[in-house]
Image (cartoon, rainbow, N blue to C red):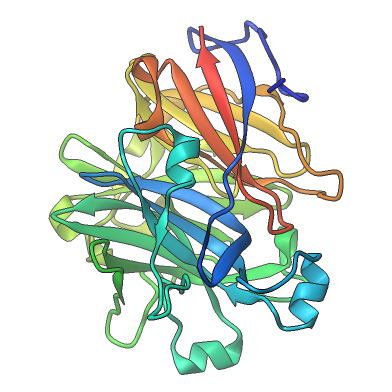
Length: 356
């Protein structure tokens, strides 16, 4: 498939490496069962497991198996669609990203229809909360998954949603069980954080630390932040240290300093090919795919370099949720795979990035 607007052979240099090409792999395959079919979903971050990967999604729309093909609006108005605030499933290992996403086995109900992994309480449902997965890490057979709660509002910023805070859940991927952790009567890990902060957008382990990244909205732009915690203290909000630039690390989350520009959601991964860390994200308005390279999990990261504009449906104004999936990389990290979403219940679009 041709690049359809993405940069190719740019020769741009990011902290000593070249981006040779960007090509469109295609859309993720639409899955279905005997009594349901996938219409589309947002999100699509992946968390590496011992065998395969856990994929997590935000808003998901499913149609009953006997529902005719129709536009999303009529499908919802006729109440033929099943709307989920989140969904998750296990994909096999040993295959490429597109094939893996085409073989996801979703966490399902007793009838085999995908269900929400993160469950709201009755009061949260009454208030209109949605729970959107962020990212997480697998340890000792469990996945520690960060998530945010959102409310749809008329003036909720870029997407029309207002964040209500960040929580942490423990997932048993073998059975699809999920427990949202609480601290006293509080589900939010850090209630003092401003609502414009999305914590847990990316999680990675480096040496004896787990690094947890966050984005903060500043007008039409976003800034990245990072905290670190020992694996044994990941469930303890007081166990986190926040990066404060030249001052090092502090237990005071309000002292955290920015790592520079990012997207509302972004990825950070160790890249063996580069011998450093790579931050990947999308500019929601322009549709530019951007990368920044850093020497340590906290940087310093290079200035953003655009790899070109990603293709999008002509009806779509925004693109979002640009994630790199490092466990599917090839050539020792020289070929990367990125997914992104469009807010019209379209399936993820997948890109392949080749480094020079």
